[in-house]
Amino acid sequence: MNKDVVYIEPEDDITDIIARVKGAKQKLVALVPPKKIGVLRSAVNTKLIAKAAKAQEKVVVIVTTDPSLMKLAASAGIPVAKTLQSRPKVPSEIIEEEKNSGEQVIDENDYDDEDAGADADKPAAPAAMPQMNRAKPQLADQEISSDDLEKDSEKEGKKKKNAKIPTLEKYRKWIIAGGVAFVALIIFLVWAFTFAPAVTIAVSMRTTSNNFSENVSFTTKNGDADPESGIFYLEQQKLEKTSSVEFNATGEKNVGEKAKGTVSVSAYLNTTAGVPLRIVDGTTFTHGDYVYTVTEGASVSYTGSDKDCENFDEGNVSTKGCLKTAVAKVESTQSGSAYNIGAYDSGWSTNADTSITKSYSIYNSSAFTGGTDKTVTVVSDSDFNSAKDKLTSEGREDGRTELTKKFGEDMVVIDSSLDVSTSDPKSTPAVGEEVKSGEKPKVEATTTFTMYAVDKTALETFIKKKSESSVAADQRIYAITTPFFENFQKDGDKFTAKLKSSTQTGPKVTEEDVLEKSKGKKLGEVQSLLKSINGVSSVKINTSVPWVGTVPNDPNKITIELKVEE
Image 1 (cartoon, rainbow, N blue to C red):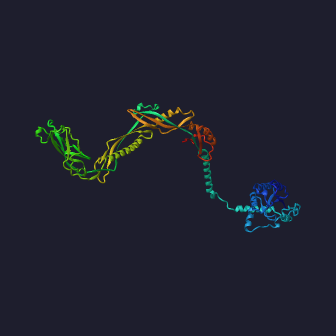
Image 2: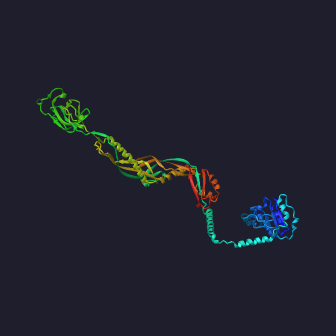
Image 3: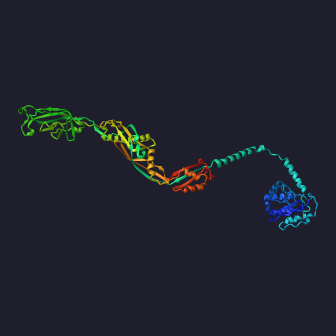
């Protein structure tokens, strides 16, 4: 069977090739591409060639050994021959044969020779294709048969019939998994673009701090309170605590024996007065730094005539009378050998009543004895006072803390109103008593704590009302610091103090304003609108998912945070 050979030039396009296929006189057309395939590199172009050949009822064969072009020819259903002398085959067979045994060349006698000289009129191949020029004279003897193409098609059909037909069971899991994945994708897309989009708009505003100070008064009768006028009700809390504190005793005391002796008092008794010289128990006599107490008193008197007195003195007025002596027993007020003094006829003083006589003298005619030393640790006055102060200070702070907790967080406690009343503290052992070895003395007392507080809401309402008069029309109060009191004073039933606090004022921006300016708008537009408000320092918009570019219209999906800068 004769054929037309079409040599494709590198500059040819698809329309040129199709035109030459349509213009071929023979039913069999062999396409010979150049080394650089060019236009045939496209699967679309190879399919266009196959379609054009079919429309003209012609058979197209591509002569090539390029594997990539073979694959393109296979996709378009075009047979391929390795050379003009080779038998055309399906590209898959050629590849398989190359793997097994190499190239198979078709003999010239396989073709029918209907017109041996038909190819003599064909033009010579270009100089760039010398191999093709040498093969050209043999075309008449080595034709490609359409019957061979039909046989190859029958063989391919038989192979396909003999091939095992796959069942769906093998792909059932993949089909199910693909279906589940598809449904999950649809659900995700619905969630991602319908339910998930949400935004949080954080607006930060610059504020200014303004100090607040106002004199206020208080009442302990709830009915007399008038917060708007600055008269607040005082709520009182009381607490009683019995507490104790241990301390170290540093005092020392001599508990040895006391010195004993006698003291004589001599006086001239007036004979006309008849008043005795009496020294009673408890009378003290002092000599230098040592004090002695009368343990057994004495009394003497004179009522006789002058001539009956053996020691009568008629001297000067100060000594006129009968000389009498009263002797009293004494002991030292403190223990210790230091009180063992010798005999002294002068240097004594006493608290005895000596006004009955114009002249008297005190002396001890013999030394005092019996005083011994034994030093022990005792509670001194300074020990007791230090422990008492510590008890009061520690109890004060504990009482303040407990009372503050009793008031609760809704009350503003007036710290300076704390009043502490402590019963007489008692020391064990008592002051001056010995502290035994291993024993630690302590001071114990019952303390009553009293403190006042005021309702925080009432104070904040008062502060806000007083401050609003000085706030500009486009400003509002955002925060009030915790109020506190100074100079709390009580004068009878009246209480006064200075209320202090501070307010934070900034632009009038509400959540409703932000919501109305944001719904349905793009994120950048929302930021520009809100930043244009005087006093707004920054606007941050956080989205629930990255692909959200517009604020939802649903208010439930918009969270607004108004932040006041410190």
